[in-house]
Image 1 (cartoon, rainbow, N blue to C red):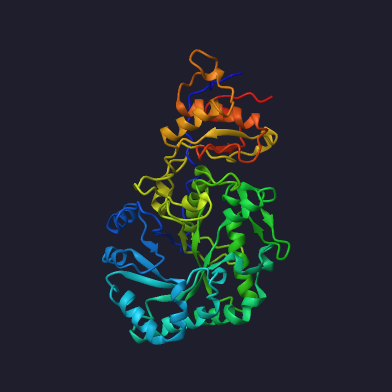
Image 2: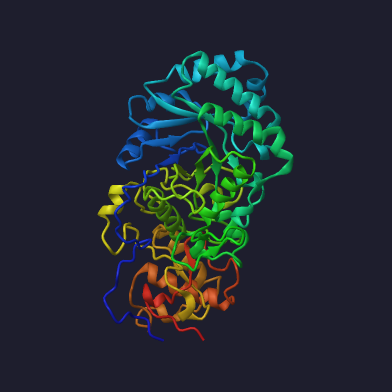
Length: 471
């Protein structure tokens, strides 16, 4: 068993990218970020504004109209999308006097010092368990009427984010269609209103969900914007090289089927979790960095989707912070690009300048290698389990103790003086122990997690730390 590299160690960035010059023939899209606050440990809104400025982000999307937050964004130069929560839709639909008062209190009070550019009326209303769908379009109409009343309608758009679950069909993308029961009552009236007001449809798109549920059918490289053979749409012959474009084009196709080709789309949420439960396949720091980093490059290149090649996309990443009070699976609390301490969960470029200035070997500062970066053909379908360099020392040590103790991993070779003691680093020793446990468990799903400190790679880990012999 050979445990040392035969060459100098290389620092592997979270994903590899060639320096490209952005097309001058197509206006680039924009990258913003969702600022959720379902947590009890976040920095103050004033500090958040400074963080966004430092990262070169000039668009943010909120989930309410919190006074402290909106005041903090005043005179910041950052454009803001605010939201009317689902629980207010019934009142907003019933009476314009309600939306008049709401607009005065939550929009007029702060605009134009705070550059509110749009209002998301509700969020994923069609899956709201409180059955607020019937209130959506009347509420949107009343909000727009109130904006018009106060001469704000020319500068502030209205829309409502929809989930991809609003689609009846999404594969192939050309067959995209909305659910029949939604078309006449809400989809067509909403698209009519967006067309009339010169607005756009907000779409929440998560390739992660599709991949996690169908990892046996969907290539991880396809989901992460990496090099792959692509998928040819059997309906129109267009070739897709990533799942994100296919999802967005499925919505475009659904709109086209209803004759709303002229209504644009903005991606109001998209992201990839850096941690998840054992059944949330693909949730890891390296995959999150690859998805979001490659998405930023794709958006800022100015290119459109195969179906709408000349239309750039505006995208809001989800999310700014890990939010510790969100309910549901572990992934829900781990979509953030930043920890509440403002430390990066992983490092990705967020501006065109950062991408252009990146060294040829990579654009991030993360030392975590990316799984699936190299074709798996040479490793004959094998997988390995390695430690995440982004984990805290304490978590990594606890996980190592478990693997070598209760977990039953063979840790004899990493003891002082043994064959695999060097390199003598916590990450290297943890990777050895994790992989020993993983192989012992026959590489079963969920056996390479260790509290979010490990992840599966498809390239022999000798490329990262050392050689591991697998019988």
